[in-house]
Length: 111
Image 1 (cartoon, rainbow, N blue to C red):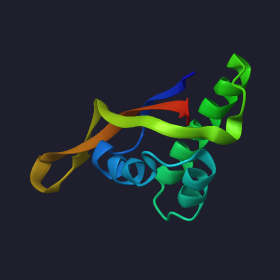
Image 2 (image 1 turned 180 degrees about the vertical axis):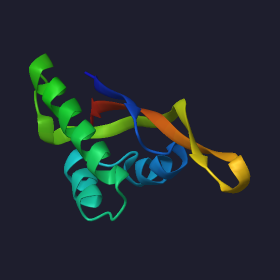
Image 3 (image 1 turned 30 degrees about the horizontal axis):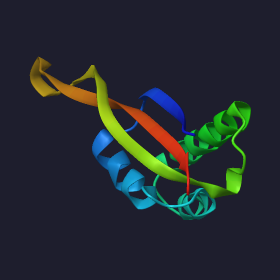
Image 4 (image 1 turned 120 degrees about the vertical axis):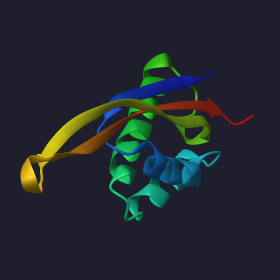
């Protein structure tokens, strides 16, 4: 049985978040959470919370053994980009792009 969780419009760069997500793909839940706990990237905390949410969803669905869950699929898509302007010299303005991410995780039981 599979369970999933999604996080939309996270104020994280998709490119940087993919580096964190690639570390936990295919791992068991406890191993993945330990990997994220000691990861220095800011996105590791949000991905860890998302994995915990997916585990809670699995418990609600009635998965027989939560310890046998592993990260079947996890991916990051780019969301909308918030565009801001910062004033510069001589009346000009420069763009500041603030990217967002959509993160999706699917857990499954090992057979």
